[in-house]
Image (cartoon, rainbow, N blue to C red):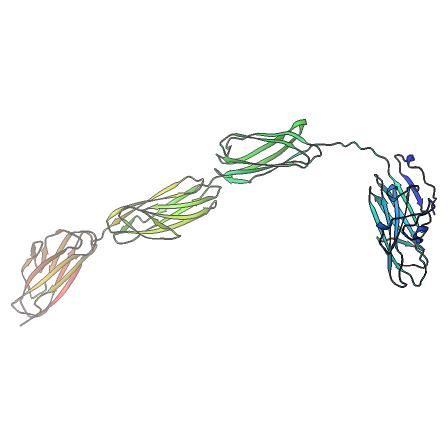
Length: 521
């Protein structure tokens, strides 16, 4: 057991002083609440207002001459129930309070377990040694209270003596006077996109924070921009009056820049304030640009009546995405829109494809078809446009030609024909094509037993042997019909053939027809 002798408080110094307090007998725990103690070493009983009806309260403190609990520097007090039943668990409390304005270190409280009290548990946990429980607290801050609850039971009637059982050790650390050394600190965090498309806004979020312990005064950031960058107002510099930043303050500024040229850009930002305080940050961003390439193709020649199919290929050969890409084909006058793929839509005299975004290296191919009822040169063009990209254009030319579709018809009128009578053969040349037929020559061939009599038609005939040659018909327009009539006399009974042959400038081989006639006696 430690000594009851206590050194005066005035002897405290800058070294740790260990105090040992042996509490006087807590005889007042056996008294009714409100009774006085005649000894200065005994615990003083609290007032009835602060105690529950079935609870006895007593206290002892340091210095021991304190008249009230509030006058103590270190206070130890107990609350125990006045009455309990044998075999029924009950708890009592020990409170350790630091009433001083300084920290008390290394607090150790030892509580003796009465012989007729069966210990069950303690909160917080204590170290049980024989019939003692030891509680240790590293430190008690000013006004801190630690409450210890001990639970147990008694086996029979009688008094459980919780007196003269508590020891308290504690130490007081060195007396210290502190002079605070404070330091302002300004931090800068910049958020900006790593890359962008030329012409786009480049948003920058600048966050200034004072993470120090003293104010930052008159902070400012003045920045000159490199060639190729301007502010959203077209200026080549910007300035941020940050002002004062008190400890923990955060200020956020939004700055919008715009690029006028592609390239890699670096901004070395420097914010300064009074007393040499500064903050730095580096911003790096790359500016890209899309570049479109267009190839438009159509057949060089088509015959009248056939459709003309166009193919348009657009490729992004730049290093930036081509947003809002649009392909437009201008249709030639005299042509009629037929169809388009990939969502192409007819708008006035154009076909428009909205193909969205083309990534670098990506290609999009669209097609369309038109028709025409005219022989003509079909000239059409296509353009491709996208955000931040230069417009590109390509042209297509198709020669629409007509075709001379000559049809030869041949027939007789009087079949069968008696020998000695005449037969009339009708030769018709019909241009069913879209192009005029030229250089049309008709030749008729007779078999034995057939004699030429006469002919009529758009050209004159001449006879050479068994052949009848007609002069050349220069032009036969589309839809026109040329007709010749040839009169032949039947000279002997036979099954004969009348042959008509035509040649034109457009035909690569002659066309011929035969007509059979029965000559009889």
